[in-house]
Amino acid sequence: MVKRDFGVQLPDDEAGFVALKFVENRTSHQDNGKGQQMTKLIGDILKIVVYQLGIDLDDDSISFQRFLVHLNFFVERLISGQKNVDDESSDDILYQHISQKYPQAFKCTKEITAFIESSLKKEVSKNEQIYVTIHIQRIINEVG
Image: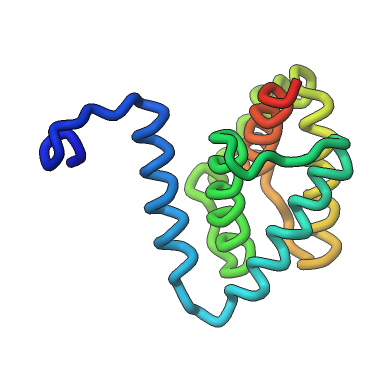
């Protein structure tokens, strides 16, 4: 649309960033009475990430922005009780591979999972853990 309307071709990463802003805007304006709970839970998850990784998160990085968008949808699914369609069939081989390939990110994900299961009394599927681990690893890669 930008190219059509303004004659400007955005680089892929910039187009992705703009798309993320639209998604963030859509989710932040949904008022279903759960916004405060979602915000607190996301904040708690981010605190776990900062503590576990011993880093400061860069709010402007694309990896952080992607992680934040994923967390919004992840937390919304948790609170509403929705299942991610990918949760129907867990990929144990991929789960094992991710846990071994990204041990630091996976350890952080396990801390997040334990926190959610203890505070919300809800199980976090292996597939959700895979996605969270991959996003955390992207942040680690960006910092390191």
